[in-house]
Amino acid sequence: MRELVVLSGKGGTGKTSLVGALAALAPDKVLCDADVDAADLHLLLRPETQQRHDFYAGHKAVIAADRCVQCGECLDWCRFGAISESFAINPLLCEGCGVCWYLCPAKAIDFPDNLSGEWFISDTRFGPLVHARLGIAEENSGKLVALVRREARRLAEEQGLAWILTDGPPGIGCPVISCLGDASAVLIVTEPSVAGRHDLERVAALAQHFVLPVSVLVNKADLHRQTTEAISQFCREQGYAFIGHLPFDPDFTRAQVEGR
Image (cartoon, rainbow, N blue to C red; front, top):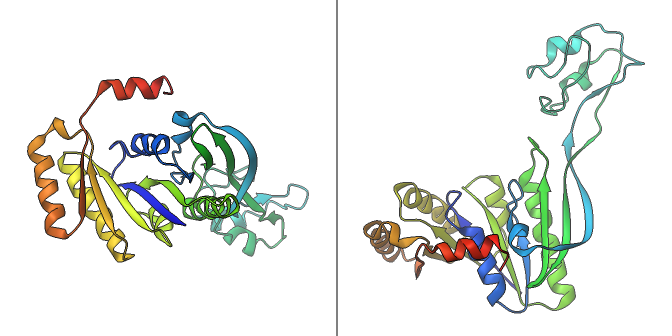
């Protein structure tokens, strides 16, 4: 079994659009949307959810009013302003550090597991899809990426499918790093702009750190042909496989909107 991870150094290059097109063309695969902070592959594929699971990661502090003596110790220790004067914790401000829970003299603060999001196994017209949704302002996206990739691999093994096609997150942070372990190859989608070239270089260097073969495709290449050629030359110099370029085509956008 092999896994192709499609990445982009920045958002908006057309990475997910390309994965949607590959999903229609490639046989014998499981689809995996690992862009859990802003998942949108489902918008193209219109999946029918078969399984839904909660995702717990980290902790959030909760003050038990019946045990709280309102001594104010937690207010003094919290560095994130998450505790109000009425001794209630704002879950959007709580960083889950556990200092208040550890130091509360009345033991009036609980520290339960935090419901951070949910993940799904769905059917699409192009095959099974494993995808997820991280909650607003939640952390541990790298952990959720690892989970959906693991489930995609399990599904591929169960169904005897040869490929996993993964739509990875943009950038070079923790979620991207979680996409690269045990991958077979990386396809980087970029655009002919200064930012596109800069971020291509960063994500390609990250993939090389994991000793993964790198291929590059320039999307919307006709918007600036000189930069497209410069990116092609850069790939040749670095030993990356430059697999080609795609033009900007409004018909492609219309097809996406119509779900075709």
